Amino acid sequence: MTLGLTSVWISLMLALPAFAGCGTSLPSNLTLRSNPRLPDPFAFYDGTRVTSQTDWACRREEINELFQRIELGTLPPKPESVKGSITGSTLTVDVSHAGKSITFAASIQLPPGSGPFPAIIALGGYSIPAPPGVAMIIFNNDDVASNGPSRGLGKFFTLYGSSYPAGALTAWAWGISRIIDALETTPSSPIDLSKLGVTGCSRNARGALVAGALEPRIVLTIPQESGNGGAGCWRISDAQQIIGPRPPVEVDPIQTLPWFSPSFGQYARRSNELPFDHHLLAAMVAPRGLLVIDHSAIDWLVPQSVFGCMKAANKVYQALRIADNMGISQVGAHNHCQFPSSQQSDLDAFVDKFLRGNVNANTSIIRTDSPNNFGYSESQWVDWATPTLS
Ligand SMILES: *[C@@H]1O[C@H](CO)[C@@H](O)[C@H](O)[C@H]1NC(C)=O
Ligand SMILES: *[C@@H]1O[C@H](CO)[C@@H](O)[C@H](O)[C@H]1NC(C)=O
Image (tube, rainbow, N blue to C red):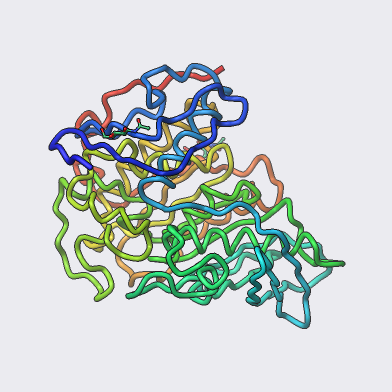
């Protein structure tokens, strides 16, 4: 492997399939050229322009593959067997694949009344108020993949092998997909599977965003205070050299942590070489609902980066003419993961629209309480135009 300053060859053993119906595929050797701005959502890797919604569907698949190859690691396809059963408030998920089996559980909190209920799957518990009429499904994600410090620990790795090349965020997303599979097979499930959301705070918000990007059965994604590696863009964070106080796990650079692919550490402080940034991770959620709940005043949560990055992601929603399906709400003056009441109406609007079916809910929400939007200058980061995709 040759590492250059402005380009890097990545050799992969994998023979990668073309995207179904898209007539294009990425080369096994990627050429990564340095780009100090946020990569253009509307240009394929080979430079071809994205001009239609059909093109975007293919571009989205390309972005998915780039994220898995470089940052997230490989998401395995659906395992051979997934079965679910509910006893009391416990959903048991039995997964078998290639002669190995694991079992994990999720806890279901039902609202009063009779279902089926919309539901929000919460990684590691939830820090948003449980919305009335919505079931909460608590997923103990660390049981499926350990947060670290070691890689390869947890039931996902029991099933696929401890050296399987997926980061924990991807393994958590896989676990959420298996919860949905299990609910699909559970007789008289109390959950309405057409109205599923996902949430989590901090590192679990990174997991929620990745799950929303990778699992299309989720219709509303609510990452809360996800920071770098979540709703923040690597480039904007790097440029600002945010070095405020960090919790112990938040070692800098974080690209080396088990959250990501084992090979992603090589991009620490070389984010300009990535053929994507996290505006494109968020854009993978489109056209489905995405509400980014964020903190405006904790520096290690990189609020400037999150705000700029998510404004750039919203341009994909604009191109699809559904700008209001994605919102950003950024408020300070509270503890990390403590939900301020001033964001309640923003949460209510998105839950109304995507989980309660109120198409008239006003989800036109892009706001920060930071003066002057942190002085964020879009022209520093965005050098591409936003088309209207027919
Ligand atoms: C990938 O690039 C390497 C280094 O340039 C080269 O040796 C190898 O043959 C290439 N593989 C393919 C499949 O093009
Ligand atoms: C939706 O809310 C935004 C922000 O509060 C407001 O500017 C807009 O007028 C509202 N739209 C409708 C249709 O009420």
